[in-house]
Length: 79
Image (tube, rainbow, N blue to C red; front, side):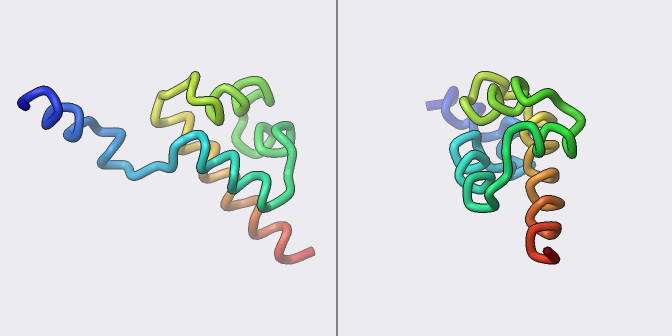
């Protein structure tokens, strides 16, 4: 009904930022630790872990983790 439509209109969907599980899978594929992601994202490892577990659903936090993974993926490639 109307409620479902409202949910789909939330800014989270507009940003198209990966969810926590996707971010964790990406991190593991790159082969970096929560600490490394945190260092790049300007967050603690605990915060990164919370984002991955879906505890911290603030889109800005997920975006920071996603951006950090992009940076780290580039670094891994150039090794």
